[in-house]
Length: 170
Image (cartoon, rainbow, N blue to C red):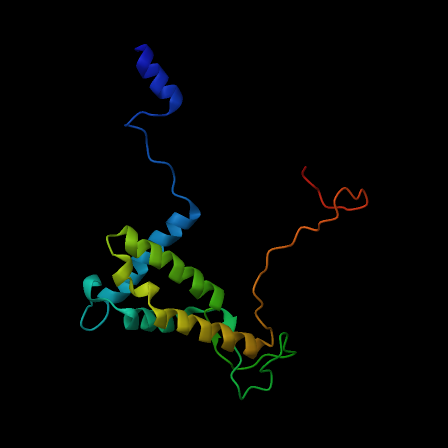
């Protein structure tokens, strides 16, 4: 084995290496992309990806609700607005807002990775953001839990106060 080849092996720069195992995120993104593609193919008539628009995406999100695991109380339910209802009810199970939001993020990235442009990305359409906001607000009201924006923790400016439990960097 030549010295250069040995150096290449040590540094990991050989062309014939097996590709690294995809991350959990990349695997999920590929699964989501394939699921969406299958959904479009199963439409009557089938929808080619090139003709996909935000309405198809919204229909897909509504279709996914039937597989949800989050109880979302209807306005007429006696447990509407209660975070921990004391008894079961007949309200539907839906996809949680955070799951839909993450799904759209992955599909948005996958669309562009598969040759789509940012300008034509149906997952980046304003109607999708509006839909997600409506789902988030409704689910928060139905469960009685307000969604608060996460804010960055502010670092206290106590200087060299020894009694502070926060680690300070000089």
